[in-house]
Length: 347
Image (cartoon, rainbow, N blue to C red; front, side, top):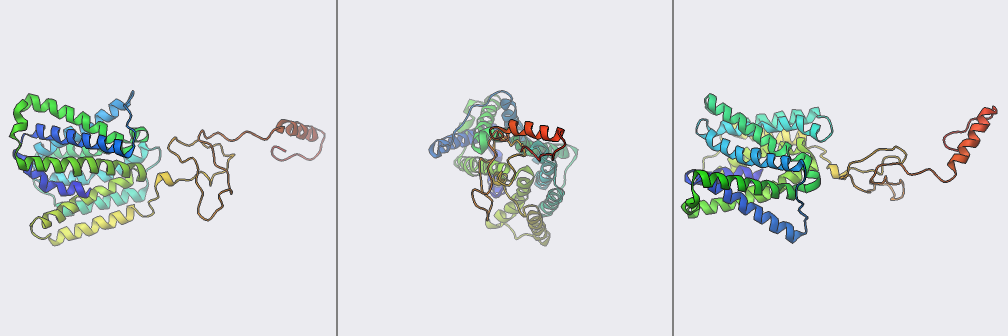
């Protein structure tokens, strides 16, 4: 989110460049970088199958294509602060819907933290002026930003952050290339200046390739509700970047908003244990609980010996009873019918 917030000043360079062509180049370069890094680091990339095509295409269409178009069109009818507040409101939605998609229930303290972060981000950016059409574009930005995270939850388990990022970028690059060919012409790439290419390069590396992998890694490890709180860092990073590039110092209201964002992050990220750190060794082997595929095969709680408890198998089924258990059970039933002491358990 620091990279995204710092990209505001860089994106202003591309205001006069052919938009669709520049975005196609951006996502194509980002996809190539991600594929090369995945090969070098030994990460496996899998082809989508079945309904995964719908989820990944939804990420590319809503979170990348429509989102960027809404930003450009919305900036002509609303001040940037209006669109910024729309993006900053996403944590509240992620705190409610994200846990439902992950198979749990929303936590009140995370919802409260998301509202605090949203309020702080609104103070940092201000409200701004707009008209009815500008509000409509702001709503589109809000929905697309939320869809960028929510639609990735069902496919993160199989594809991981790298796979989701690769498939989303190549699909978006293909869509923008078609739009660029039909709207701007085949020679639009020749209109990009040196400054445009530098801006596209920065957006490809920092804001797309690196930011996408880090974001989806956070969503997978922390959950959508906690990762969504990090969205509040974007307007703070934009304000700090503006000062570093020679802009005026933030007003007192902006400093107050930064403090509110910090309070919201501290409230929501307290005790943020990762889901991958969940342990099966604290659950009795006879409980019969079934765990999802991403659950760790084994772990040992702190301060306990490694052999203190047995670990459930990945299938989640309880181990078979010891041999001859049915003979003990039959003898117990006979003693009970004869009026003897009733045996406990399985003998």
